[in-house]
Image (spheres, helix red, strand yellow):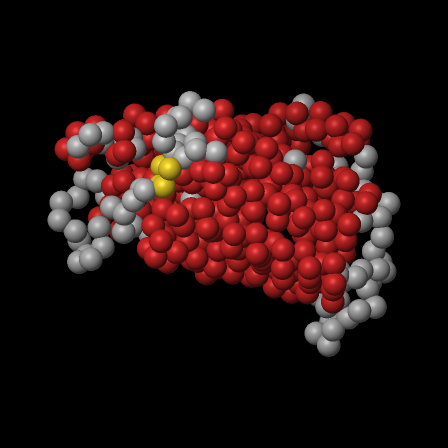
Amino acid sequence: MTHSPLTTSKGFSKAFWVSSTVELLERMAYYAIFIVLTLYLSNILGFNDFEASMISGLFSGGLYLLPIFTGAYADKAGFRKSMILAFSLLSVGYLGLGLLPTLLEAAGLVEYGEVTRFSGLPDSSSRWMIVPILFILMVGGAFIKSIISGSVAKETTEANRARGYSIFYMLVNIGSFTGKSVVDPLRNFIGEQAYIYINYFSAIMTIVALFAVVLLYKSAHTAGEGKSMREIGQGFLRIMTNWRLLWLILIVTGFWMVQQQLYATMPKYVIRMAGETARPGWIANVNPLVVVCCVNFITRLMAKRSAITSMNIGMFLIPVSALLMACGNLLGDDLIAGVSNITLMMILGIVVQALAECFISPRYLEYFSLQAPKGEEGMYLGFSHLDSFLSSILGFGLAGVLLTKYCPDPALFETREAWEAASVHAHYIWYYFAAIGVIAAVALLVFAKTTEYIDKKKQKMA
């Protein structure tokens, strides 16, 4: 394997450090807007809860589906060209999210008062201009997902690859944590206008990343590798006819549907139930913090156990997390002074959720890779994210329905008392997701026992 001559004293190429750094910037940009995307769509553009959830879910789902295809293009075109294209699209998209409300205001379609809210034309088609803007972001983000991890693989050797991915993973989580941390201070300072201005922060991050790639990214690796679209299509058909992988994707989709509520339900839920001083950005950061602290320990702890066994433990944890989140609305006086029970139980639920992720995610990829024919591991792992594609659409869609039914937008009610009466059963939302978690956990247990029986029978016949 040829490696870039532009190496550093640490043994990594300059291209490796540029790739990892721009990924940190991209994650900061993405999570800064994604944690409040449903709030932006509802509170700024006036979409109802279901519309906002479906738009966000389709956007998130596309980010997991498109890399299967953008990755093939990136391999052919080369990573540098693809990164320049990706960060250009992301910069245009984030600027578009920031400018759209201003353009609607100039057209007289939105007014800004004490509460920023789409007013006058709630059924106007103008607000749907958000869809092409999000599509631009989705394509740019899909390129990043397929490029950066591939660049890290190409810019490391067998001797330093583990350390390289460790550095890369650390920077990804720093970016995730930092991006979500920016939102709450900005919101406390300028109110709901923060949902607009946070997009300019994200645009600045991706513009800096674009210049870094243009000026600093130089790699010895050229285009011409990778699979064709026809080969990818054939691989997709093989996976769709592999009953084990298909059932595993559907089962693990249940887990991720619950996990998606960190972005689909939690931001609106805590603000509506705990008050405007709630900090969804900080609450969401509990997840990456726990994952970073615990994933290596849990992986080592379960090293002698099968992948399915580890995943089963995580699956039975996920309904517990949803039930803990429901408890916030059932407790009486605040258990901790200055912290609402809604916030406290949400944090405890997310801790359990993150632990479940530590048991499931690494071993799911391991199991998936072991089912792949030799030489097709990369393509199969690309398809392994189909569970995230499905869970984004289903999880966000269900969140929109449940928020509308059990925890509606207070702005739709004339008095606070009327809203309180309508949201008295808001915690029911989490019962639905607990039920989904239980069904997924039991399904995985049945899957494990069934596949074990089939494998033993085959061994006896061999």
